[in-house]
Length: 412
Image 1 (tube, rainbow, N blue to C red):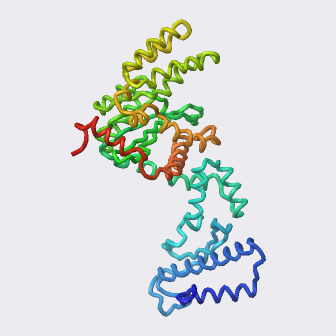
Image 2: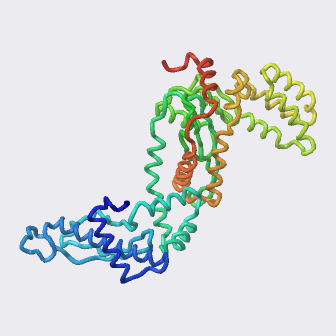
C-alpha cells in the first residue's frame, strides 16, 4: 500500500540501491554510514558538474555547442564535514575563475544546516568547544576545530543584535530586572562583568525576555541606558517594575517611565539584612520579620516593624533601619490584592531564569570576550524560553485587578 504512489524517480533509486546492496551487503551501522557517505559524495560530484555545465552552456566534450571563451579547468579537492563523517569531493573549476557553485559554496565545509544546528544546540546546552569536538569525533568520526565551532556560533551575533533591537509592545504589566555576573577576559585581564536582564509580562500574561546586555559593572547609569533602549523600542509604559535593591535604580526608571510603580524585591531585602545574623538567632528573627512582609496591610506591617525593632534593636540595629530606609519601594505591593502581590513582591521570575543560565555556563569559568558570553547566553535563552508557552493560569484575576488600579493608563 505504501509504495503504490511511488514516483518513477524514487522507484529507480530503490532499484539502484537494491542492486548495490546485492554487491555490497551491509553488516552493521558503520557500513550504513559508509554507504551513505559514498552516495552523498557521488551526488555532490554530479550536482557540481551539472552546475558548471549549465554555467558554460555545453556538456563535457560537446565542443560543437560551445559558445563561450570559458572552458573547464580540472578539479580541486575539498573535504566536507557531514553527519556520516568526512568525505572528499571534486569541485570543478573553469578557466576564467568565474564559476561560483551554489550546491557547495566557496569556503563552505559542512554539507547541511544539520551539522551547524547540532553544534549550536550543544553550545546552547553549555558544552565546551573541546566537549563538542570529542562528541563529533566519537559519534561521526569528524574533526571539528575550535575555529570551525567559533565560526558557526559567530553566525548568531547578527541575529542577537537584531533580537536586541526588535520592536516591543507599547505596554507591559510587569517588568522584572536583575543582573547576573560573569568573568570575561578583557585586554589581557580577567574582569567581572554584569549581564543586565529584563523580563516582561505583557497585558495578555505572556512572558518574554526583553533584552540581555553586557556591561562593565552593575550601575544605575547603565540601567538608565537600558530604560532608554526599551523606550526607543516602542515601550511607552510599564505598570510595575520589580527590581533588586540597587542604589539609584528608582531614579533611572523614573527618568524614563515616570508613572511606573517600583517594587523592590522582598527576598533580596531579607537576604541583604539577615546575612550577618547568627545561626541560633536566624529562626526566631525570621519568624518576627515574616510578620512584617506578610502582613495583610501596610499599617499592620509598620506596626510589626516597630515591634521587630524593639525586640532586635540591641543585637541587630541595622536590620529595621534598612527596612525603614527602603520602605517606600518595599511596601508598594501592599496596595494590591493577593494575586498581584504574589506576582510582584519578589524577582523570583528572573532569578529562576538566571539559575538556568548559570547551569548552562558553569563549565565556562572565563569567557574570552563579550561576544562569546553574549552568544552563549542568547542560545541558552532561546533554549530555556521554548518552554514559556501560554499565559499564567491566574492571569485572568491579575489582569482584572490591574485594569482597576491602572484604569487611566490602559490603552483605549
